[in-house]
Figure 1: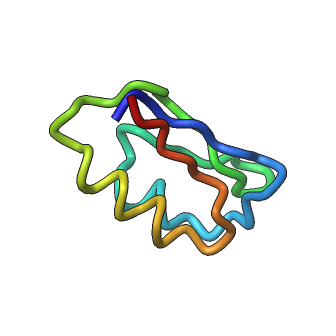
Figure 2: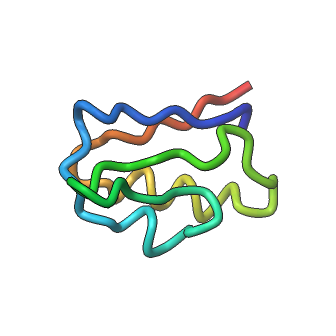
Figure 3: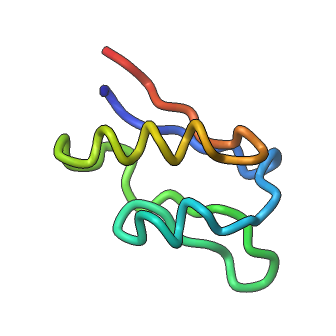
Length: 66
């Protein structure tokens, strides 16, 4: 994985990403929209990140491959 991108306009604020990977994702306090804490997370999280992106209900998370 080369990195991550989030689309805050698409985010529905479900919190799945922040609950699952709090070192990578957070949520804005006022509306719950996703915040990306790092666009290049540790490679050991690759499988978990792909699973979260796949399960994101609004498809707001994009995994950028090499």
